[in-house]
Structures are given as C-alpha cells and as structure tokens.
Length: 264
Image (tube, rainbow, N blue to C red; front, side, top):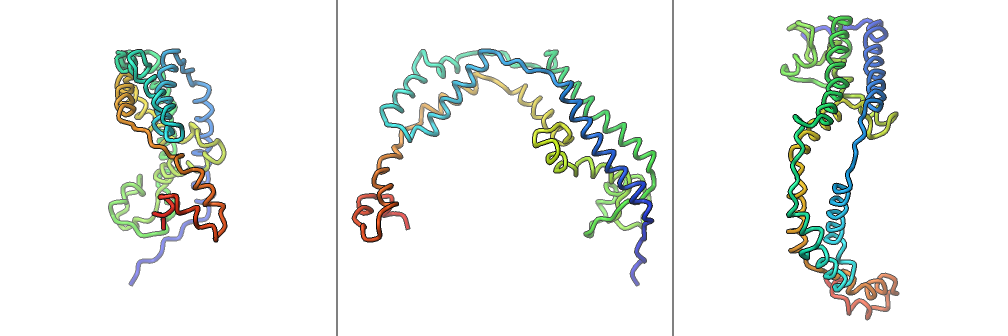
C-alpha cells in the first residue's frame, strides 16, 4: 500500500513561497545597482593598451593572413618578428605581476565583492531560515535519491518525508541560483545580480591576476607567428565564383578547379 500524498495548505504559497521569491529577486536587483555604484574605475595604461593591440594584430595576421597576397603576409610577419619588432621586444619585456595581497586597489575590489556577495547572502539566508523555519514549500516533479535530502530539506528533520519535497531554506537557495534567466532578461547579460557569476568572476579574476604575465603572452605569440606559413586561399577565387554562378551546361569551368573536383 502506497503512502498517502502530503497535501499543502494554499496559504503556504501566498505567505511563504512567493515572499521568498520576491525577496530573493528584489535583493538581486538591489545588489546589481549597488555593485554599479561601488565599482571602481579600472585605469588602462598606455603600455598595456599598446601590448594588447600588438598581440591582437599578430593574431589577426595568423588567422586572416591567407586572404592577402604572399608578399604582403611576409612583409607584415617580418615587421612584427624583426629585432626591433613589437612582438620581439615584447617577449623580452619583464613586468612584475600584480599581487592581490599587496595591491590596494585589488584588495579593495575583493573586499567590495565579498560585501556584496557573501555577507548579504548569509544575512538574508539566515533571516529567511528563521522567519520561515519548518515550512514545506514545494515538491520536485521527479524522483530523487536519498542523497539529495540534506540539500532539499534543510531545516526539516523528518526521515519519513519524501526526498522530493523542498523546505523553505532550500527554496531560498534554489531561487538564488535559479533566477539567472530573469536577471538576464531584465538587467541584461552582464549584470551583477547573478550571484554565481560574481563568484566565478572573483575566482577567475584572482587567478588571472596571479598568472597575468605579458612576457609569456608575447613569447607564445612570437612562437606561433614564427611557425605560421602563408596559405593562399584566394588562388582559385575567380574560378570558384564563376563555377558558383555557372549554368549546368558550363561544366568546363569546374574542370580547372581541383577543390571543386575533390568535393562531393
């Protein structure tokens, strides 16, 4: 005999489920605008801008050099790789990496991120767990294993309760990570309301700050450009254009093009 289905009071939807969704959503909007007000201006130096443009120019030459004549490609490659070239000089440039533990600006940005991300989440989550403690809010529409019980039924210690039921505290955390599409729809893709994105940006930003080395970037680009050879993609462009717009009886135009002959 199957166990009787748990029936929830309709007032739980009005006074527990919807208020938690509203509080989580409104707090995400507030966090977005607070992060915009507290964001510090990142000053870009002339050297960093020049280095970025040089690396971008070299990468464009490697990727799109097949669309220019061979002489033009070799001239640009020689200009970048010569002894006085910007890529050659860049790989010999030694720049001390920025240490977030000694840089006041990076420490300030990390502190602002923690104030806007971790601390409010703890305070709002604790208040919701205290105000709505012990409520069963909703049920997951698919069966789950017993390992999901501590995650979905936080604050409710009932062994006989099915794992698919979600407590009020767990419902708050599901809304924190589940309203990303709503934030993207209202605030745009690059918004600060997405808490998971902020955590990823903080971790990746600290890692990039520790590993950012212009000398390694120039060295890798110098080696990549050094072994890059010119491939003429415009060799049969006239015949290809004629073959694309030729009539079915004009088969003689395709006989001169090896690429068209090999294609099925």
